[in-house]
Structure formats: structure tokens, C-alpha cells
Length: 247
Image (cartoon, rainbow, N blue to C red; front, side):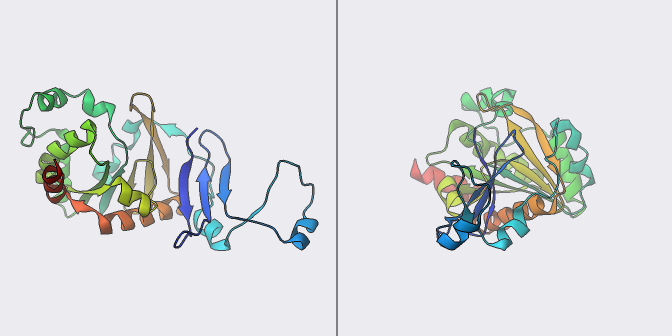
């Protein structure tokens, strides 16, 4: 079972970190082991399997979940947010491929070597154009492996159509994302207020749904990830040129 990174107060290799254990109501805490004999002697009802770590109070203040874990919802349940948001819809994409891409007709055209940069407008791009005309922003950061996977190369090839519609798409290498301690899960963040975290079938990359929350700790962690990613990410056209130059 893959842990989900929640947040850290780590600086320069320090370790205080919180992780969520998916499909449970448990949090895993990483910190320095408590070794003070006086403190250990005062602990109560200690089982042989238990250990104790120290973490800064700020870690729990910032990131400890305050609400019950949200229920998994169909992705369609948040479709209205892509029209109703007021300022920014921001996406982090972390996966090496998506079933929705591979199942689209455009995927086969791309495999055939066709130019997919100038596809006819679809419902998604039409909505992006409508919302950005009102001064709203659609922004994405995509994490890309070195070398890129087929799924990532497909998204690099199709990005110009989304950019032309009004999206601002940027990219980070996976190495840089790891250095920045970015989350390893996909999410949408609406107006720095509503967080929709994706769940995927790990076998075939199918979207299972989203977990939607306004919990301040989780939203704050997403905002911090967004700010770090956006600062270091490279615009889509520039990144695509860098990839081509390495081939």
C-alpha cells in the first residue's frame, strides 16, 4: 500500500513528516527517535511494538487532518467547479500515463505520427476559453520522467492545443519534483480553497474518482506544493524544446 505524503517542516534533510495510510484512518509520523531515558521512563502502557518520535508542534498545526477522511466521489461530481471557480483552477499531474489518454482517438493518431497540436475545439477547451476570457486562470504543472514515458510525450505533443485555448501548462522533471518534496498524487485546487485529490487504479491508470475537501490543513499543503512547483516549472513550449534537444 503506497503512503500518501501530507506535508513536512523539513529543512535541508531534516525528517519531520506526516503521511496518510490510504484506506485507513491512520497517519504515519516520521521524526527523530526519542532516546531520553527520563522521558521514556514516564511513558505509560508501552507495548513492545511501539516506538516514539519527536516532531515540531508546527508540523501537526499545519498538516494534521482536522476532518474525517472525505468519501470517494465520481470525477463528474466536480465538473461544475471548472465553471464556478472564481480565480484559479490549478492541477498537479504526477503519473507516467493516463488511461483516459490511451483510450482517446487522438492517442492512435499520435502513434501514427500525425500532428495533434491543432485539434478542433472540444468541450474542455471551449470552457477554458470561456473562463479565461473572464480573467480566470487554468494552470497545470506536469511531472515528467527522464526520458519521458509515452504517456508524457503524448501530453507534450497535445499541450499546444490546450495552451492556445488559454491554459498555462508547465513541466518539472521528476528529479526536481522529488527535490522539492512535491506530493506524489494528482489533484485539482480551486481558488486555494477546494482540493480534489485523484484516486487511480494502479494497474491500468484508470481514474476511480476524487476525494474533495476544504480541510484547511490539506488545502494549505496543496497551496504550498503549488507555489513550489509553479516557481520552478518550465513553460510547455520551452520544456518540449529541451526534450527534443536531448533526443
